[in-house]
Image (cartoon, rainbow over all chains, first blue to last red; front, side, top):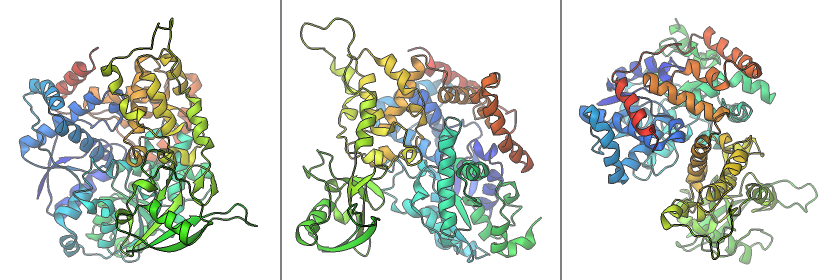
Length: 298
Length: 320
């Protein structure tokens, strides 16, 4: 199983624990990653505010590079996934638009033919690897852990750009994986709502209110941790949780796991190998519940 | 087929009024909508169940409510498309608006915000002898937004309104776009100035809820993004939101990817003494990041082929 790997900006910036965790987990699962070293940022919806054509052209450039490799693209960020899926839909639905974009790409010797397949690691695990194959590789059952899913907007909406009709399992793929590692799902309506990250610099009060709302709700429901396939959600829910807790006046302590970290713990990796010590909210309670992991620490 | 409707009810006339759940079992045909089933309950089982509806054909926008946690028009939602394996459907009043009774909400906050964007044409210059004319081409981009039936579905599920009732919200902002984008309107700049303020276009989180739930394809969030572009183009570049977009684009143009180290301080403004409290407010978060060895690097290496990324920026962003 081989993919053109698109790590995105945040896995090497604000969440540097994510990139190495993905590499280790994919190696263990025999998922071969061929990194798209020349690919640019997707624009994250921000460039698209300024100019949609600009964002779509940059993404078409990345798609053309993956086409040259003859590989599907693997993303590890809900936002990258959503922005790329939307750009791909616009380009594939409108041949005249695609031709216009290709006119700009020509000077680099690139052409996007419209065949790119873009899949988040979450979907790759459920659809391509499969739950049974995953379970066969797990060495640790996370039975004592209660985990709340948190998707990130761009991996669930708009559902037509993300091909939910063709892949109905995507709507509850995170719950599928939580169950696969043996943990209990803590379901809540906020799981597909917004973490508040996009307005963090614009309206911090509202952004932090969203962090407090979701983290305190799952805390009340008895969750030990939340898991997210989106590093932007992770940044807000983890790094800004102390500030959100102070603003709301609610004592919140909710460890936030990146999706590959949850998988990594089930695959037998130690907390340090998964970079858990780099989280702002202490992961100690989670490590204790995972059991064997504590001994492997360090 | 038999369907169980799990309805959230509320009667303000009771002694200590509190929302409660009530289930109704209905014998339904497979072509029934959720509204058909609710009307059947009201007419044959429980005349006290309050709901609002009129056209039953997704034109009037009266029957907006939450079905299985998401806002929809009950008349446009087939029962079989939302029933779970046990044949059950959860029905609640629309969100972000006060409940009057059962499934009826008070839409005053909705209408107040639509009124706040001055939803009428404000042409400038002398009035023409006959009607104001506009070409088909110039009006085409407004056909989507003109399809809005003011049902409140987008407002019900707006994630910003959940935490801040002051936000103008998706319906009012889509309505604002309808006039800002109208070639016959002369108040565009004044409108954008107002929309650029707190609680306006920059407070949207871009979460796509309104795009997903809108029953008429209005895509309010896409209109809000278009308003942001129009505001920047009109010269309103001083907001944090506009600077954020500018700094973000600058970083991608420079190295091909985002430099998160500088994004926040540059967006807030590093040399403006008035912004000092905001910068200092970010300090504890930065210090915690340092302590956990996760502060983003100050300097980035450009990606291979960066000259092509810059060329794309120059070509696409060149004045059209």
